[in-house]
Length: 91
Image 1 (cartoon, rainbow, N blue to C red):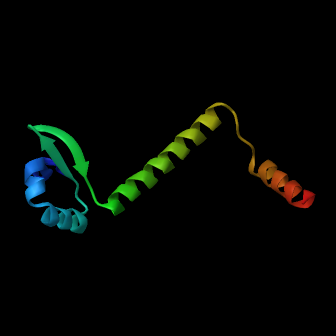
Image 2: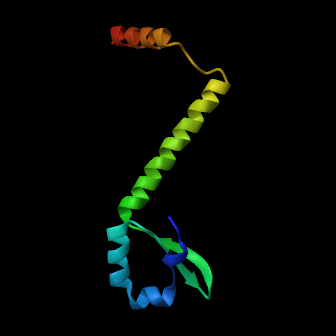
Image 3: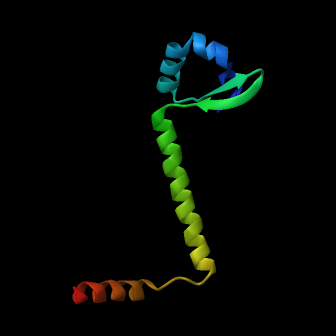
């Protein structure tokens, strides 16, 4: 995604907020808002934000899993299932 066309001043956003929000929602493309020519915030639709957060959460879990493997904190599938069966029997 090219962001050059998505950079707008905050005053432009204020003057055209409803239209720009509709566009952001329809396209899923974020808009970068500038103040005095400096990028300050990104405006994006809720669905895109939630998708980004879910992706980040997944990547964090993946990184934690990779660290567990590096640290040797792993079990074989057989051992894992045996432990689950033992817990079920204990109930």
